[in-house]
Length: 473
Image (tube, rainbow, N blue to C red):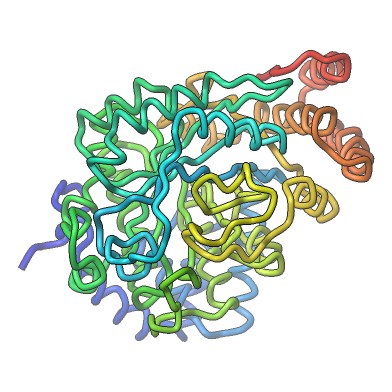
């Protein structure tokens, strides 16, 4: 039996089954130990994070008063590190060809009635123009695993195409990549292509169930998949994004595994995950989420987000349009710092007038346009940010984390958010959204700490109004 070792590079040692079982037993035993829970909350207030075991106790706690304290603390920590900014992005599906047999994904190889589609470079360009016309500046590209249809060369060509398209005032300034686990050499190629974050969801950390859920295809190999982030970092990728698909296994098990993965990356590479995603199993072609009996309530979903925010205060948290506007509103308050808007989860979906459903990876629960999402965020008091400056200024990996941990990042992020929002308002917003946005920018300038920075931002906002673009700190 393998022993738990966060510094090990072996999956079964850094995501250790027995350690998770022990953690869950400990959390169950202590879930009503209010003295211990208070001690954990006091530690959390230092903003240095919690261990997977401490965070698991908070998640298991059923005391309403303490749960409220957890939520309030999560909200405060979110404000401390991320202010009231929400980073905007969109997924871009390149190909749904896939050789894996994942039981929860409609792209699985045995699904014969889903139309298979792969974008040509010309189609990629058209999708990018459609996304730029909405106002997007940051994409996450997605593709099934298929060495014949989607080799690494195809992904690299797509990245090149995406970065090359300048349409009107549009430009995609950051491409994050969500593709199957691959080799150090291929991660190096992605790094050289100028990607932002490499994202790979674990799906489930429960090895036995992982193998059942992935019966065929290269993804069946749990260790190779789980150790992918170490290879990505070895290949020079500074920013990696992890996540589980909640609903495939018991949520407390997944929660502990997720935090152990974050601890492992911190222990080995000196920098934890850049982002953590919290998708839930959703309905899709050929997939019925009720077949997975581990689904969790909206309330527990929000509590998981709050506990992640407390446990890893510096890490960005992502929630997609899988969730309804109501859930998104609640979960943003408790810790989420990045959301997608106007998303289409089908291959080639952005160029079609009507939202296509035949090649969707999952049902979208938030069908609002990007303009509507931006409008909604601002009415709720958040600044929609299209900023990509850190990645382009080389503030990635440990450099980003040290700035974030010291609070210095606010001096860049807040002004950058306002300037990129101004671009959106000038180029893409409806009249109502523009009006709300202009008032918000005027008010938020006063929250910039340094007078000198304030003056520079005011000057640049005038230049943006006159047609200049892409200023950043």
